[in-house]
Length: 437
Image (tube, rainbow, N blue to C red; front, top):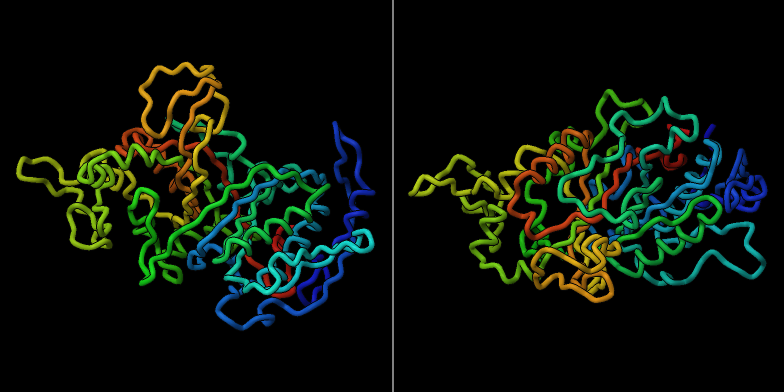
């Protein structure tokens, strides 16, 4: 049964959990620990009443239909726990932490801290919550490990391999995802730091990615690092189209109602090569004008592309391999963030060069051979986040079509990949996953 809750602060005894662990391999894993949970303090929905607080509880988690915030960190963990009971305790603690931080308060104290040490860091003291959201999901294979195979969401399975991928395991996969978004990068950094400090013995950090987005001052669609508006065809929150595209379908397990799926892809963008490409060619690659985002057959950004239109010589105005044509017909919510990690000495996938530095292709301005067995290059691009209720028929089908023939493939490289079932929301006295465990 859910713990008794009356507010926002949950204390989870890490010492009790760790004391119940058993040795496996090189470390301690948790087995069958039932932690005492106490909940106190005000609900975050009443802690602040200004525009800087995103409502925390509800049918769905915040951070999905929430208007984009300016900064994001994606953090994934591999779980060390061995029982459904301890998974529940972790979700209870995560919920309390999210409730407190998104409401602008300090994190819950951890009772097993040595005297004189505090969970709070004061890193965000005096700062607005800055529309902070923290959104939690579980990766494939997690529930099977806890004898919950009958509750696995029907469409949660590892993504297949796609032609052209050069994936780095250091930014792929994971058991537990927390998407952290806010309008202040220090608030995002603080939330991640607090989260990281609460999981030792329960989970191991697998990878993080950090992104940003420029929000036009007059509203409108943000632009990616190729300069094009990104997310033009997104469904609008609160509409039937949004609901039928994003939220879990009726044939999912009952506990997953209100949940969704997130496909995460790290996409390196060869911006230096792109910048040396004529504007007319850039527009032809995308099938839209960079200046205003309008399709080549239209006058305004939100005009529907006319895929049947031809020019005076009978050629299609939007080329057969234009990105907008290849991606058409696959509805999903794109909630992506740009990233810019600057100059690196790694390959496009972030891995040691398997050729030992010997390469058989011409090097562009984004990537040059390096004598240390890797490539010097710019690691900039897009943290592509696709929310939807049917990944196979949305993202997977779209990506297979794009991998076959997309003019944009000359300028991008997929280097990270993961999929998660995003848990439903919960009530002010519940916790994330309370319908699951």
